[in-house]
Image 1 (cartoon, rainbow, N blue to C red):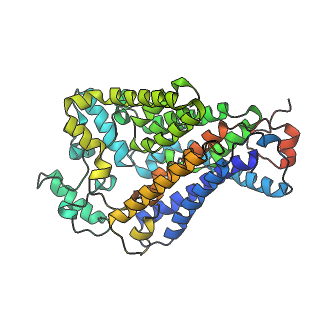
Image 2: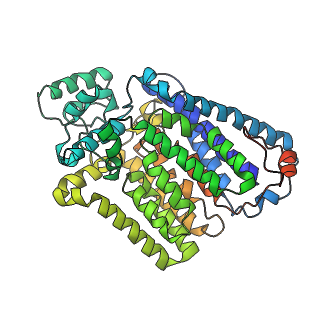
Length: 453
């Protein structure tokens, strides 16, 4: 696979994730609709395509022999350009998103993090003091933006509570009838997930613009890190991977961990890369899945001692940013951080589990999916270790593959994969692509061809 093909593959994977995400949303909103298998297969194929794009070192790909079928390359890049225009449409439409969803609080991660930030400004600990009913009442949203639990009134619910069931139990608990056993109420992420929002919470600004800004900064850094003559193609691919822009504009707090993780991965050869890694780890647990793959890559490039030192620095940053809450109430802090693991959450997601929750297959016990996730994680680590010199960038995608088999494999786990893959490609020694060569190869961008110089 050559330079333009690698970059295009990442963009096409992002386009596949875009369409998969749309179908996934339709099915969740209107259960019974067809297309479940399409979503699962599209995500699996997107991950396979991203892994294929990262196989090898990429050394000198920009000057490698040209393929014979330039018409195919031109056609693929034409499709990428069209999807890039779709992403630009989402960017332009950002101010009007509230008219579609009527609220900036698209999910409980955004809502609870903002309420947690407001509590910190009042000098209170959100891990102990957050009241989900008061929070949602102040924000004007309801139980459809919560994470329900399989206990209390929902103990006998087989797959997922209906909207009517959610509303009924929510109204009871909000009015003080019975203890809240059914809804996650405390922040379930490390402290930076809401500490980073303090300036916006103080000013009353929409935090979704911060998440979008994080994406745009990450995209800009990837373009800057890429070879100079390939930058138009990287920028077109970042937009062509339209899942990135569309689902960030649609509402996602994941960009808070994605930006520092991109920096840490691209510049892992620098001593200071441990700092952005620590920030990512202190923001959201999904970044933890990347840590062992980052460690393997650093060991390969700079040795065991440097990798251990950097990981210790990252752990120190994690501890420092969470220290106040650990000291105040360690039990509450731990309960919040391990919520996704210890609380009895319903099966949910767009990965393999989607076939069982919405595809008609009988739901298996939770430990089956957990075992699949663990086994896949071990296999991915083995692959990363064995290919650490021949394909050093594979970990950028392998880190998330186990989540495809998890009991909860939310679509938000996957839509950013093209961003991480393109960050990995940007640090590959692809070489420079001459103007005439790019034209003959059939490369297209929505900006400009590479410089003639």
